[in-house]
Length: 107
Image (cartoon, rainbow, N blue to C red; front, side, top):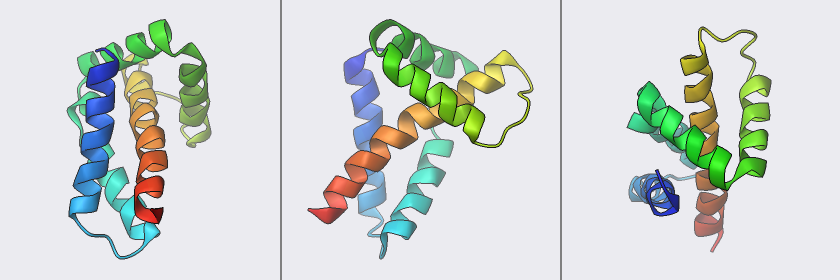
């Protein structure tokens, strides 16, 4: 995983949501949740670990935020470290895509 790969995934998620032509921002966020949750980066442990490693090496401040969101998501305990990694990967894709999507829909 590198910055280009990471941004490609995020931009693809935003493009996929926009292609669905959501009627409201809430509809767009629901779609984004579905698309992020279905990415191979969130589904497969190895890819989630690659994203978390990338964040640790190149965007450590962001990783801290995504870890906090994973804990705040209401998961009291994680099944495994792999499971925890997939939740961090979810937030690491959802939050930047959400921010970009909001800008796209407002503009």
